[in-house]
Image (tube, rainbow, N blue to C red; front, side, top):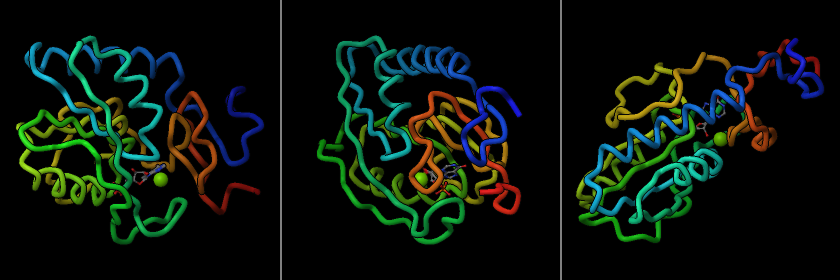
Length: 188
Ligand code: IMP
Ligand code: MG
C-alpha cells in the first residue's frame, strides 16, 4: 500500500496526487479562460457536494474580472458506491441563467444520469451557452447528452474518494484522490 494511503480504511492507492491535481486545475483554468471572450461574464455552477473543492480551486485559478459562482445540489437516490436510481434536484441555482455563459462543474461523470438531468434543467432556462467541466470522467456513461468540454482526468472504474468525492460522506476532505477497495476486500 502507498505510504500516504495508510491509515485510511479501505483506501488502496493514491490515484491523483495533490500536486498533479493542482497542476491540472491550473491548465483547465487557462483553457476555460481562453474559451470565453474576455469581456463576457461567466457563471460557474458547481454541483454539490462533490464539486466543492474543485470549484474553489478552479475559480481561484480563472483570471477574469467578470465571474460569478453558484451551486446546485443534485442527489442520486442511494448512497455510497451503489447509487443507481433517479436523480433528485434538491437545490436550484439562485442565479439567473437566461442569456448567460453557464459553466457547469461536476466532480465525476459516472453513469451520466446526474449530468443529463442537471444539463436538461439548466439548458431549459435558455443560457447563452452551456458547457461542462468535469474533474473526473469514467467514460462508461451511456447516452450522455452533455459531454464535458473540459475533463480533469480520465478516471479508472474504481470507487474514488477525496478532493470532494465521498464514500458514505467520508473522505471528502482528502487533498488527493484515492481508490477504495471493492467492498468484499475492505476488511472494515
Ligand atoms: P452519475 O450520475 O452516475 O454520473 O454520478 C454522478 C455522481 O455520483 C457524482 O457527482 C458523484 O457524487 C457520485 N459518484 C460517482 N462515481 C463516484 C466515485 O467513484 N466516487 C465518489 N462519488 C462518485
Ligand atoms: Mg456523492
